[in-house]
Image (cartoon, rainbow, N blue to C red; front, side, top):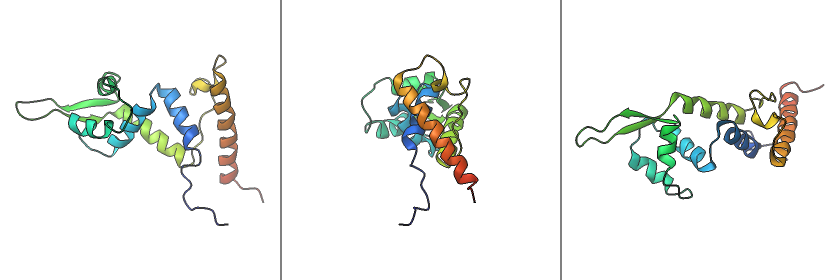
Length: 146
């Protein structure tokens, strides 16, 4: 059987869990940011268009704005709508996530990865073990043994 040429989503669940934990986001917030990432500028209407697909959270936009994931590009002026964009912070986080999907290792240091702290939940420990295995696999792919 031939392997698929692009196997980006093999570790999607692990990477998503890491991103959610590290940046204290919900799945809905991450999904919206992924949608908005390719939009240069967007109005609140465009945000709401995609937000309808996700579990209802009336405060999602305000939380993303307050926490710095989305910033105002142009304030509302007369009949012109306010425009927003994904912030530098948001673009960096999403860029990091895409790098991980492309084969970059997830850090195993407690200072960078909250799942490697001592007092974590059982679920975090299970994902932590998977991250260790995933990183081994990535290293093996990078430097195959003869």
